[in-house]
Length: 250
Length: 249
Image 1 (cartoon, each protein chain N blue to C red):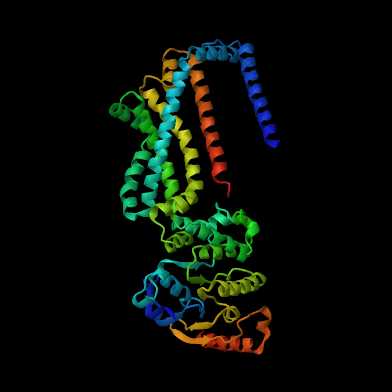
Image 2: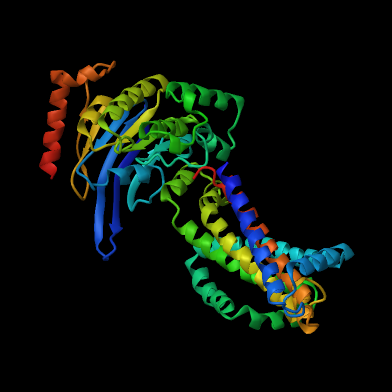
């Protein structure tokens, strides 16, 4: 089932010295339900812009976005590279914050928050302040917060970009598990090719500015993904194929 | 432990200074109309307190400072918010507010007394004028540098402006605003006293002018003593509030 259809989305910016910069040009992409799509591309190519347009943080110049479920647009989750936790609120208070704002605090949603705390291994940190958390823990909290109101669509903008390799591996495993358990549709921007292959069902490769879709690669790897998978020939093939595409671009 | 030690040291210092004061007045035989000895002064002070007249002067000044500071904070917060949000308002309002701030308070005081009378209103107005400015500046600059991630998240959750203000902007601006209030309260006392000295029926500033006119050094000293205590007290309140509010820093 198609959830979102983007048709010929274009977007340009005016830079500080008055130049028009075409960031995205004629991007068309349809997102199916329960997909995990990663978007990769050369740095500064407008990967994030695409997510920001989808979440209405930025406008687009031309094209069309169709949400096949109107509820989707008003109820999407967004995870930034920086965890942007409110420093005066505890982990738990941060996670229930969107529920408070949306006036959605019901026994059911609060029970769901408890599940999320469990799922993200945050139980023992529920009363900690963000300054007491490691980078990985902060990002877990941020992810739990984005899921607190149970959105069907989750947009993630390089959420693990600032983390060390070990933490990153760990969170990749957890995110993959989370995606399977909670049946979300995830759009994931990253600059890490291995991460993209490991997590995704499809990888979208964007070209250099002005960004168009260079190719979409379906990742046909086993459902159950462990870290050992990354040493298998199939995985390595995907990675080198995608790396080749990116190198063409730059 | 460490804190109580500081207090003990402070008390010792104050006692030493009072002893020195007493010694100077005795040794140099300074007449009491020139500088009363601490013993004389504190006798006078306690008698003055017992008559109950002093209490009404204290409460008058306290009232002006508290009410003025409160509304000054409110006015400063409202102005600061709109100046941070709207470039047009900033360009329109800033020159006007600056002119009002740059002109010495003493020069504005007679104007306010003419407009608002000899009573409390003119002093409260003066305090509001003085207090609101640093708070407005503090808040608007704090609001302008809030991490855009917060506001973007609030947009994604479709938060309304009030929710954004109370849940993100206000807490983020707290640090700066409290610093602004700390500067403001000390100035609030000054401007209340200036107002009272210019024309009033009661208050510690009124007591000051009264004392000066009657060559009553004890009265002047009582007023100065109380004003310093008042300033210290207000500043301490700010410190306590700051520690309570900024526990997460």
